[in-house]
Length: 281
Image (cartoon, rainbow, N blue to C red; front, side, top):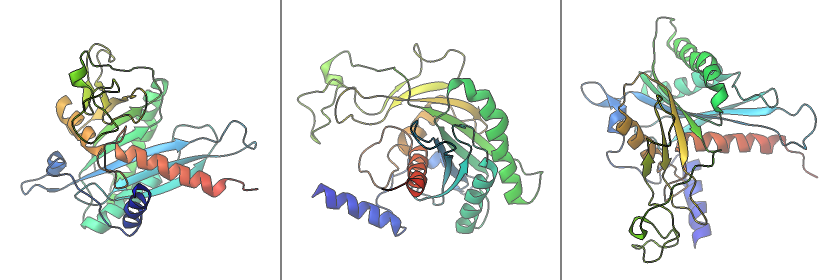
């Protein structure tokens, strides 16, 4: 039964178990001569109060971070902040907590940080660079105990609020999302894994669209990724491949989700924080 299968997946995660792993998909995140784990993957999101909520209701910010070599186990931090404020005010403290949790598991700090930030509009990109990415650097220095520490940061914005859609130009390129077998009938969506990084993307900037999931109903909405910083020096194809792999790194799902799991988990953590605050009648 699908319901009990989903419950079992979630129970195992809560018990710090790993439901599945991806074979050799994250080799780019292993560095050094012995290809040891040296990268933490972070995700962040902010949840805002509903429009009909009480005056003065806060927003909830959350940061999650990987702790294992499979990039399947994530721990999180969350904070309250001023309502309707998208820039995360406590980014430094939450990232420092995630770095120290990674260090507790792996004995040393990671050298590289791959960050997926959800929910930021294009008009706030410069503010994210000046405040949030700077806060990530300060968090690393605080965790290392020295201002001389310089983390290698690759930072992406995940966008979902757009009207861009893609359609195959022939039925052979589509997938029937209701069947696990090779499709005979199609709902008209491209196969999962579609990447578009030209023509409809922003010129002169490193950005791409990725449809990693099969839509259950209707038209699949691809996620838009804008790379604000790429200190890791990953090529476009490498970053696209990593991001696609992370869409399959959600322990509670057995298929690809619509955007990278770290950002999705941060969104879920914000929802949990909102549930703590919600008034029940």
